[in-house]
Image (cartoon, rainbow, N blue to C red; front, top):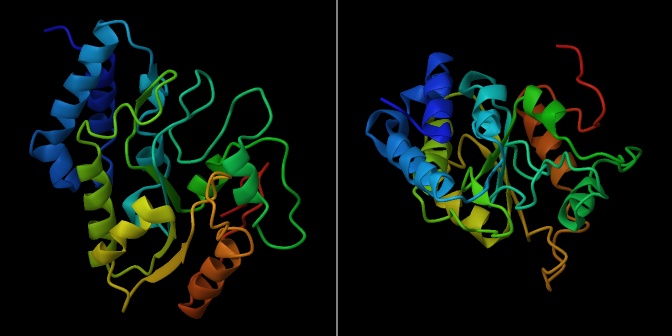
Length: 236
């Protein structure tokens, strides 16, 4: 039976036997329903981003047993070629998006803002870079926010909160901070601030030191800090 591109990508993700597949989202039909809905849009001629093979990158690169930190975004960049399936990660050919430039300016002192914005090195260190919607349509930011992806985000946060491994959650902006109710703060860290968007009139992200605060919390739990530098993957 023919399947659409995202349904096929979901099947390939299931073949990886990832620990994330134990979430109800992948067993109760929700993942299949979302994939089918996205495939309908693709069949109708919509350009869905990122490419199907990158949609599950956040979960594929950062397995549940390796998560040390979580950063939640909204949805992928809506310009073709810009997104690679990781929240805030940018692989396009132009200058860094304004929000990402503001984010990277908060990395610890002495780490220069890099010219490229691929956050894969963070993901490989255990930073789960998860968007509330894993897909978007070209030129239509937020187009898939109500497609059912949010159930996955909630389940991921709740499952990490229920785990014994200490995790620090970096919650930026109202949408991300709304999920703080799912987190057991007696066992996990929460670093909250405003959204890094330049449209945030409160300007309460610059100076919030999220990366330093996250590392301080991790080290207090006896967990190795994260190397926030880009351009290389630290040895493990």
